[in-house]
Length: 220
Image (tube, rainbow, N blue to C red; front, side, top):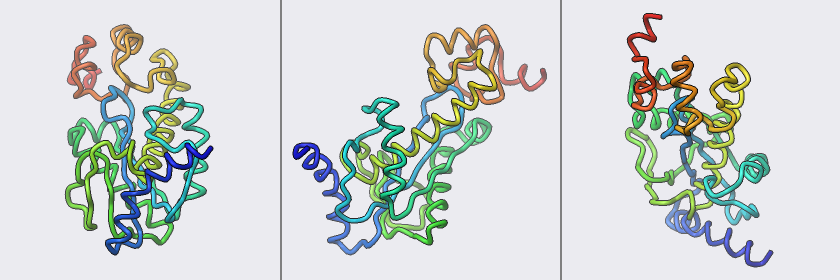
């Protein structure tokens, strides 16, 4: 327990440094589903109180689904504020995946408004968010090294997984609950067999190579 406390405490260093520099509220941002062939891309924003230790907190990609689902309500309970946003498959096709991901992040920022909260600084995993009216800092591998970004990665991932489970219930032949829209062998085989659904990203090469083009789907 002491080792785990020390590990999670180390994730707070970036937020502590930001507060020492004058930021009162620091929000972490991350996304989930950018590389999938189907479903929305999700983003989350989380503001944690200073010195908040959430045992088990880590990059969502290194956690099992069961651990992520256990952590998500604990993150929401501990947070000063949190928001989740998404961009649909149609928006991804219209805008491109990178702009659609940033759109989901701006929507996640809007979600913080429900708590009456506006962060002074945004720490975002990977790349800065264009057009954000708040000071921000991009952190390489932030989801593994910064507590509020790790927390955001968990909310983004679990929120997206819930949507994909819903898609699976409506269209079980694609196997969305298992592969979450990513290009697994089973998913690609289902695409070849059934063609894309309205929830597939028609502009993605893995979908277009399934044998039906976006134009033929639109005409069907």
